[in-house]
Length: 443
Image 1 (tube, rainbow, N blue to C red):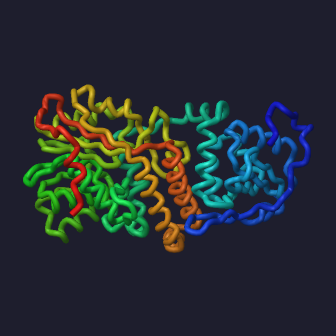
Image 2 (image 1 turned 120 degrees about the vertical axis):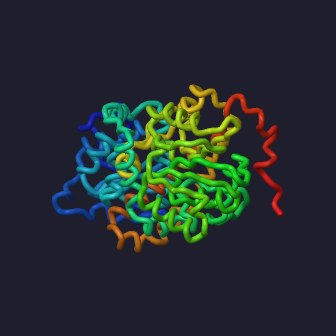
């Protein structure tokens, strides 16, 4: 691969021409691209020396990932490290220039539109690219500038309702195709080898309930209840009463119907409202997968809500995607999938606890559990892709493939974490001395 300081654009020799291999492996989602020249006539012009020079410069700045890049005219740029993990096929000049100018957003859009294709195991190719970028000593300056000037989304009650609707109200039938039977859309817990998705999601629910040490007759406030799986489990298996808040109309209706069908409507109140409007006193507070949508500016307000809700001996648990160090969500996912989302670092999460003198009792990182959860979601999504295509369109299928496969890759390489933080009031001495209650001996 040419280095950006070794040649001027007019000195670049012809790039190697060679066919690409598919790299497909059984059992993993792959994308086999059409031949690189299979584009419209207006885009079949030869790639220029300038374009190839900038592509080499761009790949070097991205840390020289072990991928091969094929341009629309069949020109191929091979990686410095061999063999390549897979191929990236850029099918038109406009896509190349968008990648050069704003790769963070353009890569996902080009993959969704089909103007960028992956040959090989999609997750492995994504992981190689993300890993190289993370380890690159320089590069990404333009992307950082663009990220800095992008408008930060508001997290008011009105805007939160709108952004939650964009992601969660796209249809229960869509999510039913690839989630487990309890419709858990958060990290599962693989306590034993070989667990199915259903078994691991049930294990996650019990893991959370054991951490909170729920007892019959207690009351629980849940912020962001999804389709109600945890609330139903807490009421049914642990005998507690739950008040659960959610802004998604479709999820709330689904949860209410399930509660009625299981005879739990008296124990559970599903509230279609913002968590900031919660009132009353509770023995426990729990939030699974909502903190990412709260917004950093509202962390202290969330702590205030918890402070006024918990009894003196109350416990709380927050389960959230996070980072090892502060960094925004990538612009494409924030724009196309999770508007306004932000995965906080543990230091940033302390803004919830410190102002109200909460004591953190336990922190567990389930990063690899989430990678496995996403792998199983992706397998099921691919198995239902024809139905998803009928419900939406091809672009939607490719967009969600990008999101799920990219998420698997990001958790695998450590770009994202999954934190479970257990806490209580600083003056509460009714706390366990060991963690034995978290891991009961299997029968």
